[in-house]
Length: 94
Image (cartoon, rainbow, N blue to C red; front, top):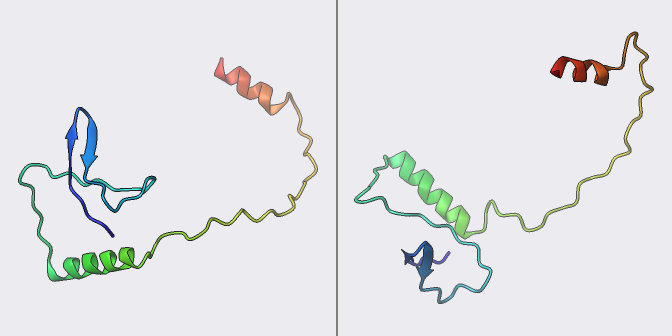
């Protein structure tokens, strides 16, 4: 994981991108004034574990497999009395 800082100028984020190849996906966290947060011991341990997992590449997909194609089961149509359902829906929307 690389960490860098930058500044927004005219709506464009400008960072010192040394070490970041073109096409690198980045996440931007913006400070809101003097905002801080506090964690209890459990929350801090969870945060550190999540950071360690991210550094190991945990949670990232190494590949996207194509969906499994299963034959579609065909059911015979059911005959109903009255006008077609689509006609009923159209009429009720008027």
